[in-house]
Structure formats: structure tokens, C-alpha cells
View 1: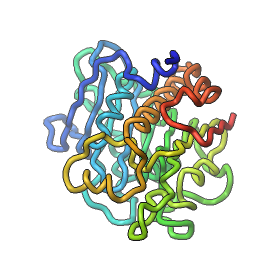
View 2: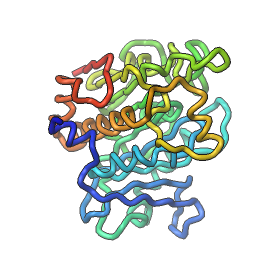
View 3: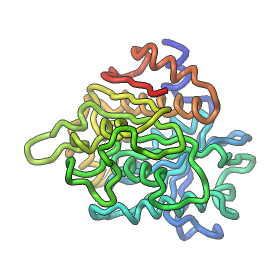
View 4: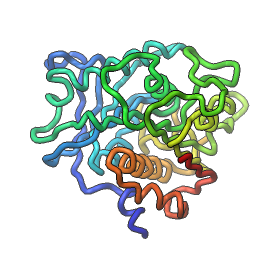
Length: 306
């Protein structure tokens, strides 16, 4: 097994604590939405990743992924943006902006972390999955203003609606190549099975025309792109997702054989990207680009815009 595989696709050296913070917390001010926070427990200052969940999913469905990333020395903040929602994502984008502002408020995120653990909000990254990926791009593009700036952006199988010409409001894709006016480096991760229908009854979970390839087409350098060939749109979720929605996550999308490999890949490449863009260490990201066989999944497309 290669050192890169050991370094990013496996668990990191940090012990991680999962914290749940409700909007009814005694913190002043409380977070605008309930939060799931994966944080290292060792003394130190750590970069922060704000992670936005997918459509009608719970932030707890990503616990294994969040722990993976946090174990490599990152504080991951995952809000529950809504429980039910219609096609318009305007309110969740506003909520994500409000949470971003709360991070640096007094006492804010710092007050919620273990003693001797400090967030470095000058190294703040933003990520989102599925509709959360759309919201992440919208937030980075300034659809809702924030007091903090993002140093990196990650779209994990982002989706902007049902089809080209049938985007959900507010539309993010413009279909103009390299048109996104972003001030931070971007990584887009795609699933090879996301645009495949599970059966005739359900639409594809990441349809052509509004999926990862369209988002990457509008990114300008620096940007990178990875597509996992035999993996599904929800294969980065926890192995066990409870409740009706958890069961539905196994039924609605075309899935790969197991969630573990895609989750390991997403966690590892997110860590590699954050190390490169927030900490100036691009060795792992370049190694994955140069030798895709080290990834735990088959990669059908890799592209870097420098």
C-alpha cells in the first residue's frame, strides 16, 4: 500500500469527537441551524470545513465521512439546513451564509469546541453534496453575502435541478464555459452512476445537463476534477443510514456495490485537496493525479486546470 493511500485514504492520526449543537443551545448567539461538528481533540489550531448535506438527507448520514476528514486535522461543521424543502434552495443558501457568519461570532464556533482546540477561520473551506453542492457553489458565488471568505470550494456530485432547462431556483449553472466568478480553487467530484436511472420509476439522481461535468465546465483555474466510475450518487454516505430516509437512500439512486470505497475516496481526495489548497502541501493531490491506481475506486476521468 502506498504512502499516499496510508496518508489520506485511511484514517488520520487525530482522535475525533462528534458534537451535536442545537439551535436551542445555551451558546450566545446559538447557531442558526443545528450542527454536527467533527473535531480533532488534540491541542492545536485547525482549518475549518463547512459541509452542506444533500437533498432531504440528514447531516448524520455523513458521520463516517466527516470523521475521516477530521482525523486528518480539520474541523468539519455540518449544519442541518432543513428537514423538508421544496425545489427552491434560496432559504438554505441564506442559512448557510448565516452559519458562516456565526462561526466567527462571539462565542460562536470556538465556544463549542473542546478545550485547547482552536478554529483557524483564515483557512475556511466550503463543501457540499448533491443539492448541497449547488448551495455551496451559490454561496461561494455570492448569492448570499458572508463576512468570512472561503479559501477552497468542493462540489461532491453537485446537482442543479432535474435537467438542463429545468434547473431549481436559484439556478447556478450558466452553460458558459469557465464563467464562475470564484476567488478560490475548486475541486469537483463526480459519480459515474449518478446519471444512470435505478429503474424506470425514478429519475437519475445526478442527471446529465445539471451534474458534476457541467459544474466543472464552468470552473476556471485553479480547479481539479475526479469522476469515480462505478460509484453511485449516495455512495459516500454512512454504511448504515437509519429511518425511512436512510432506507430510501439505498432505493432511489443507482448504487455501486458498496459505500465504503467511494466514501474512502471522497474523504481521501477532500483531505488531499485541503492539504494542497489550505496548507500548501500538494504531494498527495499530485500523487493521486499521477497514479490513479492508488485510489480505492476506479477513476474514469481526472482533469486539472492550472
